[in-house]
Length: 339
View 1 (cartoon, helix red, strand yellow):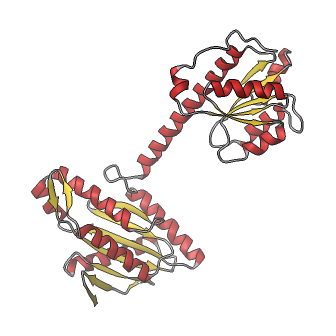
View 2: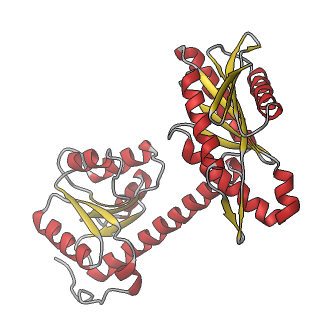
View 3: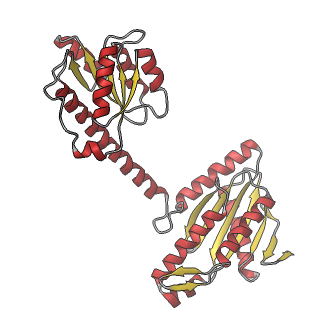
């Protein structure tokens, strides 16, 4: 049935130490199924076995479906050729490499298999060493795909996140703000926004230098991100100013989150480059239930931030943005006053 001259090849270093690659084997012949399962497991693959094309297609609908497929051409329910066509038509986010196994050896059969979407073709009975080599070729292609995906995600992250602090960039944050305001208007829910500004940050740079200032900015961004809710967004608005966007947010929610941000920065000095920097933030926040224009919403939050600074810094001013009217409340540490 097969040639065993290459059966005793020792595992290569990459096969020993790479994370196991999942392989789907769709084969209706029990002898071939057992043969393939044993060999693939010995070579370090994680094997998923199915008995026909229908089971294979069901498995391929799962979110964690294997990316390397060994499909027999002749199977009950759905044959290998039709499976190839369905896989290619599906167009998933990640590429699935298909090795088609068959007893057909006519040139036209080879052409039909490749046209259906197979990447490679192996005729039964096959040499074990040839099978292994062809699987390695598929593994190299899938590894390249993973590297390309990582590179793409890295570029996407760089395009939407601030290089220094790792939070959302200004442009991305403003895009998210617009989307949340529109969604809130459709769902008749409130959207909140917080403008957070580090107090006297110029003095930090002048006293300790810009490298220390950068470390303070990074730690401040980290503390702000930890203080908001898990589904909120934090972005760097510019310089030492940050923006937090809170979906489905009431005035009380906004006040609680804002105070949590303020205390998370002020309560513990920030260690940076061997010195401890005592930092505080001023916060302005507004809530809207209307489909307010983004610029109007930002202007209202900026006005609240200015009020927080004018009132002594290290405090929170929150209110609502309704028909361009801002109702303000000032929350100083330990004191609540109304303006």
